[in-house]
Image 1: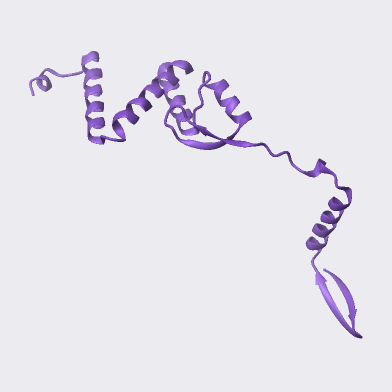
Image 2: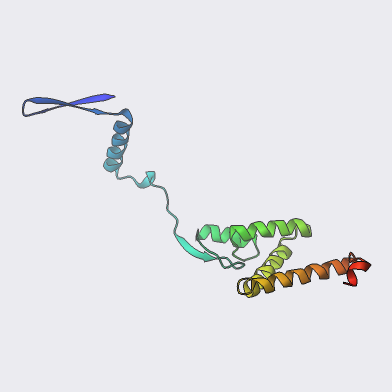
Length: 146
């Protein structure tokens, strides 16, 4: 601690300033004196970006938008959809373009049915599961008669 003494009307008063406060004050004074912009960080402009899959909006820099578009064949995809595309890539052997198309197809279907008619969307999914199991030949003879 560095005490500063002040004399006011013949009375002595002492103000104690912490070292951290003193250092911060010195930095502020030095910055004001130099008027140097090199200490200021560069601020990137942000804009609202809408995911082309799910429709979610988020604030992104132009650089981030460019990198995402480069990764996903020109499409702007939010982080959640990007993760879903990664999972889809694992399923199909690492083909990103195919995974993006598959995920976008699922999102379009969900936005068309799932948001407005959740029961209908569930029935559609059950129908798809049954189609897949029939193609693979996993439906047992006893289950077909029901």
